[in-house]
Amino acid sequence: MLEASRQLRVGVVGIGARCYLAALADSSPVSARLVAAADTAPDAVERAQRLLPEGVAVVADHRDLLGHGIDAVVLTTPDDTHEELARFFLEAGIPVYLEKPLAITIEAADRILEVARRTGTRLYVGHNMRHMEVVRLLKSIIDSGRIGEVKAIWCRHFVGNGGDYYFRDWHAERRHVTGLLLQKAAHDIDVMSWLAHSAPARVVGMGGLMVYGEAERRPAGTSAGTVMQDWFSLEHWPADEVGGLNPVIDVEDHSMLMMTMRNGVMTSYQQCHFTPDYWRSYTVIGTRGRAENLGDGAGDVVKVWTKRTEHYAERATQEYVIAEEGTGHDSADQLAIDEFLRFVRDGGATEVSPVSARDAVAAGVLATRSLRSGSVPFDVPELDAELAAYFHRGQQNSHSPTEIS
Image 1 (cartoon, one colour):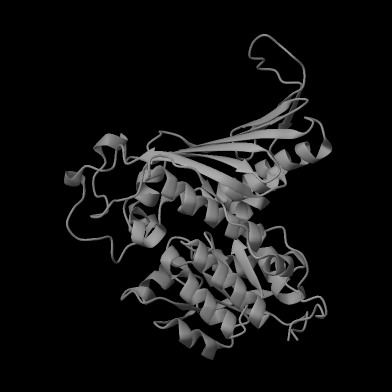
Image 2 (cartoon, one colour):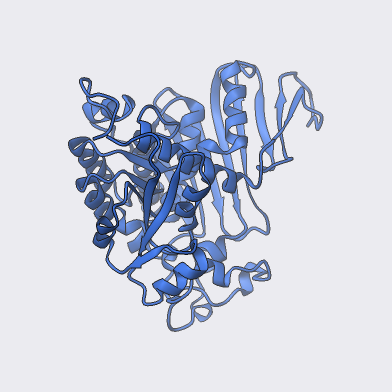
């Protein structure tokens, strides 16, 4: 059993663009410290010196992290490695923070959950957007009943940084991610499920590689030895002139999905990686009004309309300013790590849901299959009921104590 006063020792696998998540352990109100990192890259030590706090030990093999006495591990590796790594640490009894998506196939996602239940090791999936203030504000408006019973949710995602974030490295390859309707949209599928108080039941997808597919913009070689922070620049514009892309690009840069939720709510999602701006717009429509965010960061606004008009009313019935420290994603990252560390130490319920994370994988995989097969609709299989119940109980068997051994 972990003593509440003892500082948690945290490890990380993957010294890349998202490894800073693990470093947030050092600034958490839960006493914790990042002590070790693993990465197979030949420049792993140099990366750690640039991207992680001073004094973090670096190993090439993730199995060697066990020798550093870690109490928890953060996995920020490419998506196709998630199953192998998560299962290893769960089997070893090390609580896991697994960066989203949970996996790149439905079967792999289910296997991870099964191992977590069988071993009793705690699993947390990094759907940090449940901690973003814009999402929490929309949820509070829905839960208040102000807009009536929710019937439809629309999300438009303008991925202005898409060229730098997703088309210069492994994110551009199906073998690593399945597609960006999984890799990127998993966040929003989870959010819309949370806002709708339901789960995806049926999906249809549509999309294509519309801008970043030109072969002459893909140099020989790869981005090995660098991470996203090394090449990112707002000067990489306009999108149709950007070069230095990944040699292999076989994922879509524009995609859409429609979903029917199990409670009848209808949702839609549009994702474009060649817009000049970078933000999400959620619209939630109920029987008595609608809510929409205009911007998704600190100082932006969520508007609520509950009176009929015959034109667009810029001044809404009610307006709420998004109040948080830093950017939405940065604030949410810290809150997610804080929740994970509390979960490791104390157990109990968490805002994020491994079951919803699995359903986001299922919906994203099937929406991708749909868009690549003429927009044929697919039904989303439900997770085994007993397995789902285990996670709904806060990852406890009905007879289990709350402490971890």
